[in-house]
Image (cartoon, rainbow, N blue to C red; front, top):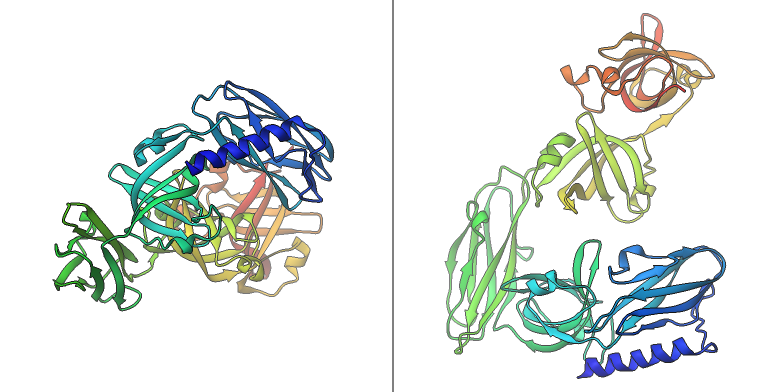
Length: 505
């Protein structure tokens, strides 16, 4: 009932705001909207507000649900009429949108009718339409953020991400006041949204909490990590039933993790063991279960980790590896920078290219002076986003800074096998097409390039035939990375690494 009254109030506010020309809301200097609530008739229709901005503005397209059409989606400085249109929605729905202008964000709430709450399983939420309000009961599987209350709710049909949890008074950013823990059985209500392909229930209201009767209290060692050479981890539990605790290790992890012992009583201790680990880092989520006298099942989870060796490999082997906790070491050239603040880059070696989702903490990439063309060694995990492989949690192990210079500047440098330069010029002659031996010329001078290989780490036959493969020839512009050396008194760029090229006009 609280949810219905809450939505009725805002639906009324939205209706009033849409009918008045004198209720302009000024929240930001950079951008203002005539109403921050937009109401659309439950039978379908449109409503229009005015956006008044000092600079260019745009909606976040990823937030706009499939049922809503907005025109225009962006605009420039001054006043712009923006129309919101939706087809009929008998069950009602709502969504929250954001307009970006300069470095600020203006919120707009779109409400169509009064949202009806539907009892559903996790699977039904995942398959159902956006912006419906659902009531779901399940177990708290894991907690991601304790400020906003982002966590995963799991039942026997699947798992749903909860993005934001309201406290008992309907306020945000007070998740800890609810006392929710992994293993608790919870009933929540909230609207479904899809953000970047992830189904979410947004800013849910907690209807009921049933505290778990089994709980993880402590680990020994405290980080629940077994060393690479093998060892034990003990998990201390509390259990408020007389029916004991059962333990489940995922089938795919039983080859390396086993149970040594389980003590009884109200404070059981479960000890796990793993042998020496010849592979990369690994982990297993183990589940502890108990039941009350009515047969209701309660669970708790613990993640057991084991350190592993770092797997050194090519980019192609990294891309072919499974997602998981194994640490990989890859070296290559920064082909391009997607986000310098976070160190999101594309890394390329002779075998391929991968996306790296962040190097270190925010600002570390810039603090290290990294840029496109530098040669870096990274250690991280093989992750995946929307089916595309990427490196996550990357740590910078080594960097070879590459300096872009003219050919004349390059010829004045001392020979040094550890200092790398990038030259850009026009190919005037190809001396050996198999290995890419060629002459390069720019406005300042010319130089012999002894080898132009597909990328960092190429050896043997993998060094061959780059020019033919990419269709590079005389007259094309080439950017190549290498070191300064001298052969028979003639300076040259040695062991060149291909960076980019453009065809002759």
